[in-house]
Amino acid sequence: MIAATNIDLKAAIEAKAFREDLYYRLSVFPIVIPPLRDRRDDIPKLADYFIAKYCAEMKKPVKKLSQESLKLMDRYHWPGNVRELENTVERAIILCESRYIGPEHIAIRIPTDQDIRLREDAGLKEIGQHAQMQAERALILRVLEQTRGNKRKTAEILKIDYTTLFEKLKRYNIEASRN
Image 1 (cartoon, rainbow, N blue to C red):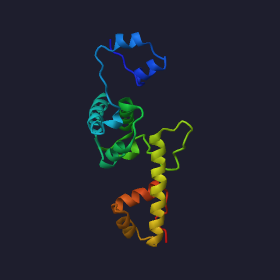
Image 2 (cartoon, helix red, strand yellow):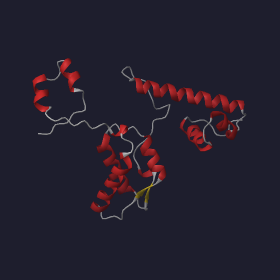
Image 3 (cartoon, helix red, strand yellow):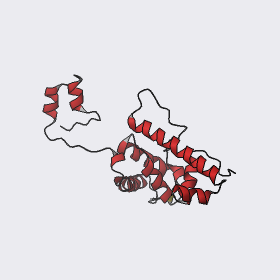
Image 4 (cartoon, rainbow, N blue to C red):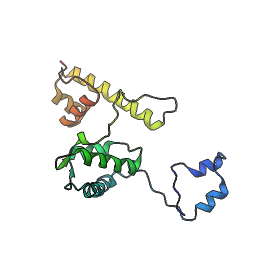
């Protein structure tokens, strides 16, 4: 028998939400598989596997992920793990008519600062992500003001690439033509 769960069974046992005897009956040979977000190197390999699978099923020529798509997939949190990745790739194969799968074919969205709503039950990771985004946005605005909108100088002061600055301007909805 193979059983899977995404909850901490030992914590559930302590909380009296799972039977200890059942845990020991099932836990003969435990296999712990970390979530996809903790195995970023697996994303391109799994995506290629699913691309080949669905291209064959749909009788379409094999496609490749564009570099932008790979970057987007690498930045995504994948709360649905490998199943979500598989569904994302299948949808992309259905939508994509060209040789390369672009970000427009991928049904994932990286949350922006405005998207994150700190719920009462927000975890430390979400709160930290929100705080980091707020701090980054404020610093970019301050340095842009200091440099009178000079983006090259702003990137230099922030010690980031010019293209990274543009990505952050877009992400944080900062007007590129600040003077």
